[in-house]
Image 1: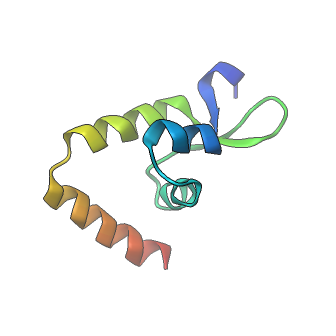
Image 2: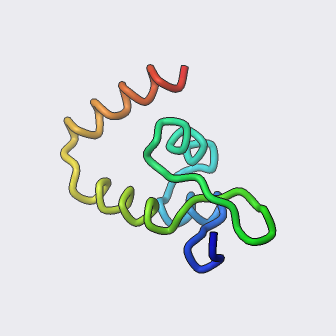
Length: 76
């Protein structure tokens, strides 16, 4: 993946305002797309971070609660 289309997991967490562990959960649940830079470092696509940010900005509390419940069930 081109380096300009990739974010490290810590940077993605910072941009989303969440803890790093949650990035792993979002990847495992399919909300963020995993990617690697040219050096092979794990991260996520910028597009998926932007989509996640847009969803967080527009989702209702009910939608967020349902997603959290679904993600918790999937992740465990």
